[in-house]
Image 1 (cartoon, rainbow, N blue to C red):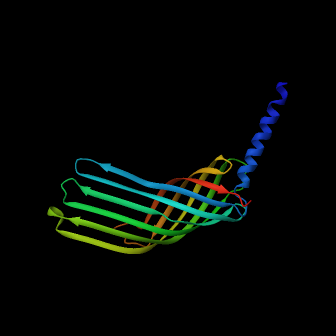
Image 2: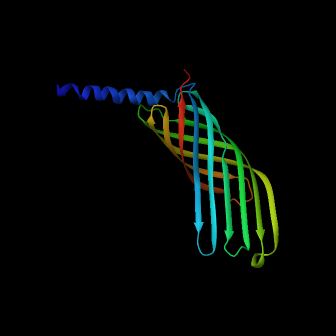
Image 3: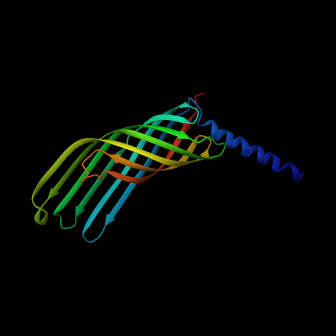
Amino acid sequence: MTRFIPLPLLAAALLTGSVAQAQTTQGTRVLGLSGGNFTLQRDDFATGFSGTLAPTAGVFVADNLALGVNVPFSYSRFAARSDEFRSRGLSVGLLPWLRYYLPSESRHRVFGELSVGGVLNSYRRKEAGYYGNGDQASTDTYLLASAGLGYSYFITPAVGLEALLAYQRNGGNSQEFGRGALGLSLGLRVYLPKN
């Protein structure tokens, strides 16, 4: 009797793996939310917070090849304890992406992603005392491009947890944003088959 137990377990494992493969077939739609770059600073001199959330939607245009759009929202706030300096930044972007999953029959999937689009950024700062006096505000747009490698784990046949490590390069003011950065984002994606 115990000889038959491994056979059903093997069949279940193979079925689960092929279901994960089916989630990346042509026509499957994808909805997701990811976040990253969260920072909380609190010390004797200053307090600050920054972070990014990015809802995403896409469709598999071919097996293992998805095309979609990412809408990142970023917020940052910094204040000196002496109240002599305060800043706030808010940005929203529209970033089309292309993602390719390496073919696999496993719940573990590796993918590559390319993304390029525009970001609208609003920045405001208030200075007093040692830093000077006055308010400054600016709004500008810039181009943001990224390339990265990621890992997705299907916790169910239709839901994947993922991590993406990507190098980003932007065309904004290098003193405010920096020209290039390596970032890690974590997310959740729901895969909706075409039928």
